[in-house]
Length: 405
Image (cartoon, rainbow, N blue to C red):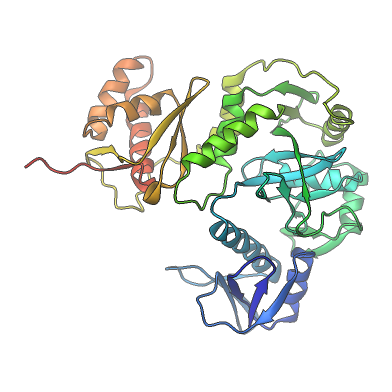
């Protein structure tokens, strides 16, 4: 059957399955939907085969999943449809919770701890706007979708007994891996509710140490927001400018913590009223923090992938519609049309981008970079250059140079 969700023209195809229906109600707890008739291609497709549910992805074999995992996948597809239908709006991958009438947003990659933080804030009485996707409305206020927070199980060791009890007592739907929370009335913002942004907090979860707040440099906050933005625009250059404006006007902080309870106490003391009450300390080691927040999820990329047809030895040149922005000593690429994305470049990447003003291949770029960084193993330089060449080509920021006539 086909379902249409409020605010979307796209529809989704789902099975007539009581277990899935229960999981869907637990996830889209306040996102109204209705059954419709439609002929257009659905934004997502889930079918039933015997006792199993199957998720259908383009050009892939159907993937068997639990009803809860199917609901999770559907929420992702709905968020993507929302972005596609509202391409000029900003949308961030992260959680958000109300403190004194303003939203503190926690942008971050998967496994950064944002869902656990959002669930713990909800347990403490805060109204949350979601734990995974935060769209902004036309005024660039946070917009609630009405999707329940979803925890990955098991809970981390830093979860207290009281918090574990709250999670157990407010189970919406669970399958042993994912656990949707059925929050008390008023703890989940209603679908369509809005609130002004108050601050950006980058979560730095560590194995040990006290909870501390530090000022996040503009460049670090913008790097994380750019990486965690969900984009659907044909031209991302204005979106990058708007992200930069948000970073400039909001307090941007880094929360380093090992104990979840200690971190929540610090947040509540800091944002008890606006403007914020506690002056954070300067950031002690920006390079190490950047490594933890931004590069840890790339550590397993030993070999470059080439889904776009990139081949080692291909000579690349910059796409003419891509613009480089320098922000506080950092470089960001933003494009239009087929290159509608935002990409951060570290100093090595910025150097390679300069080389791509003219047709250049991996070996030529690696030779130049090796001279600039003589203390780095040339094999590491060659690997990193190969990864960046493949990424730039896959994203469309760089294209294969035409052969000279």
